[in-house]
Length: 577
Image (cartoon, rainbow, N blue to C red; front, side, top):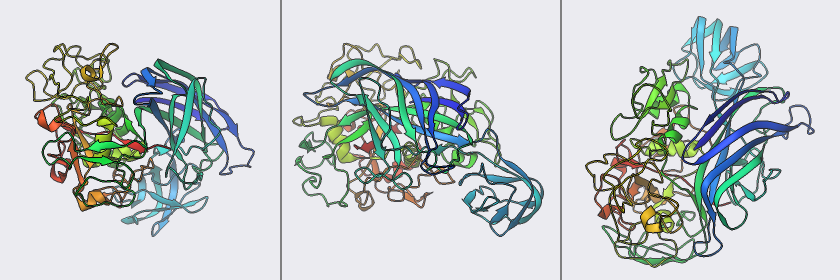
């Protein structure tokens, strides 16, 4: 994932800060906010600005025959209001109502704390609503009433609401907006654009260079007034389009607990003998996008760096106030995410970085941000997907993304054959060009002596590789067999079958959990378990057999899904616009 950060005056348009970071081979640059339009009236909800940037990535494609698909960038925007945390003196409270001098820079979800004076906020108290120009409510009544207190409100990152039209497509590009609820009517507040798919407008292959991309941000619909100062972060994740309307097979590859071989011929078609799930259960027949790679450590680092302290505490193993250099998740099996700057409970978030080489210098070229991210559990993955506007993959979508419309092969891996060579060494470890010199290697599996953890995402692909030698699915998705297990929604469990394919909205609960209550394991944004989830495709440490496409040994494994293991990760999908 690529992220860019700038700070801008919505009214004055002055750039005051700029930062660049890279992940995989996708890059954003020259992010600016331009073209502010206030013709709807002062502070009107219809006011907007254009978020402009350059977007490039290598080895892109669009095919008109065969798979007839393309790769794309899923781009979404986060914003933060103000340049410093709002502070107030002489603050009083009545129940959950807090009175301050001005609520102009306050946002729902901001943590609040008492700095001095009389009054005490309970831990993890946040702004619940803004009720007037001088009052707001909190989610928990102060444990001691505020009387003339000094308080601080901690700034947060929020998802920018994009318009459905008015975007600028550079030559050779196409932009499709991903609505909060695809396939329904756009509404700037109740059904906004959560992000955008950007891809080639015609057949071709090679590097994409899209300069001057513009996405229309309805900042007024986000409740941001015309004269506010905001910071902007733009993220891009590589995706692959999986075409709809084509028949495909599930179960034909065999394996433990495999589906009975069945041809899926419609959106309501399911494997023979299986209990029919909810009416909108994504069975893979309709078009969708999937992340090209498993979530990388750089992507998870960037995610953590937008969360509050309380949210970070639930998305990591080590407390955010642990010393610099402390592993966020684990220091084993090639996970290098560490605390760079410790947080302070109820005051400030931690800053995280990648430090695979353990030299104390974060985010160097040798620090492994391109390695797939292990040691995350089901709730971690759901939080990341909700935050990025994606959703979990079903196990039928997993088989469709692997096999496409091709005839099933008994014992096949994601690349459509039984040919397998496990990597047993790592060259250029932690670098963007990390590879293996094992001749013919196309998978990280079977716990090889010299590969005791996941490899760089896309590690086997190159300019001259074939589908088999690259370890690629029919549609060009990487590492669907081996490396790290793919967490999926299970068809074998009633909770999994109740899934309806709702997408993330970019927001999390105050405790850092997904707020999508229809996803397995989530109720009102809090942890209830992982029932209805499992994993497919095997990992670097699993047997070769579990890495085959149709094997369902772990398809319904809630116990493992709720633990942070060295062999599991995941990727997100999104129903095509």
